[in-house]
Image 1 (cartoon, rainbow, N blue to C red):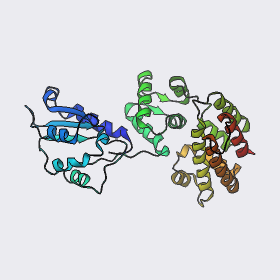
Image 2 (image 1 turned 90 degrees about the horizontal axis):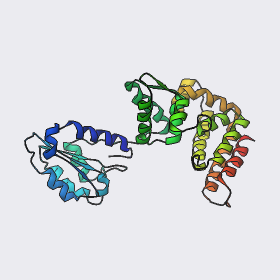
Image 3 (image 1 turned 30 degrees about the vertical axis):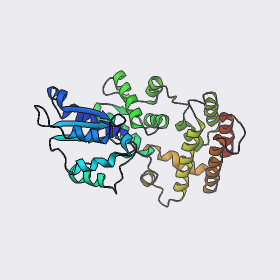
Image 4 (image 1 turned 120 degrees about the vertical axis):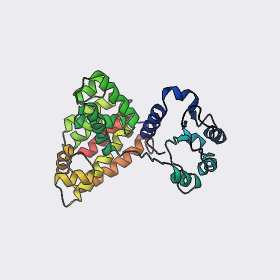
Length: 312
């Protein structure tokens, strides 16, 4: 169960592929979907005996669709069929740990809670996925993937698998590879915008802003504002640190040590009072971009106005 479906799918797919031999699956493996069955039907299937095999496997996918009635499963869990392996995939939410069902499952089975990763944890996850398969990735390339795809591990994994088909083993995935094969610009993205702002490179900032204005669907302002808000919140936190050694900065801000110098450079350009003012501006423009207290101003123009306020 949990907010991150990637690991729920991985575990369930592994069980589906490996617990029974191929010649046992026809009679002894059943995959059901929460929207198509009732809890009573699940219990009925789980109580069956296996045919010419030691066990049967019953997998319930999208079990969150049974959320209103799933507590009825408690009666079966308290007296389960020993030869049945029952797998319940409860995605995007959690079964209430205070109720009887969770306590019953946790007593006799295994509960795996799949939590969403934070933005700063995903680049390391990408590296850990690629390394055993014989691939490397640069910090900038992994950051581009995170900023373009967010923290959706399934989406990121799909793109990584495409790259592994294209690239030979022992290849390094670089920003150029990402741009050429996934379509994320290595020069005009939120990562480069943040870096240019931190360095107060005004000309580059507005080149990127113009690109965003010309391609608003690929570069929604709400995403840009959110990422900038996170960046300046980190700068505010950095200003308050007594120990600004690279190791401590990386640990406290939860950023890759590769990027620490960019943050240290940024606080030289943006004193604490300025950072506080920028955070206020970001809140204001976030509301404006959503139509609050604002006329129908194009998103690109709003972004440019915001960037002027940040850099002036």
